[in-house]
Amino acid sequence: MRKIDLIVVHCSATPEGKHFSTETIRNWHVNERGWSDIGYHWVVELDGKVRAGRPEQRVGAHVRGYNRSSIGICYVGGMSQDMKLPKDTRSQVQRESLECLLLELKLKYPEAIIKGHRDFSTKACPSFDAKAEYNHISYGKL
Image (cartoon, rainbow, N blue to C red; front, side, top):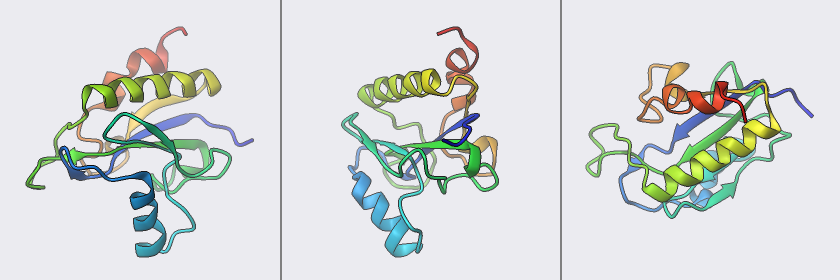
């Protein structure tokens, strides 16, 4: 098993309230970008369902320079309905599912800290400050 010291939260950069499935995102990554699989290990869909993406034992393709030791999670959304502005579009069920998933992953990978994609790039992704919001999971006692 690879050593995981980082969990990175992303958004799909899709319009608020519009459903995109994990399979749709996988299609974008495989057929449009030419990748071997979806870049994320987990996807939190609009209805709050957590879907498996790339197997955790495989290196992801979600944050350049940090994929080898990280797990990537994407929530569907992250943009205003008109696609003009980044926006935290997480529904209540997405918020709850994402937090539960992060807690489970932290138990599995106790050395891992949680950050957002924006902590590694100039992108707004995931359209909220994941590092601050999940600080209690990264550094709290479980």
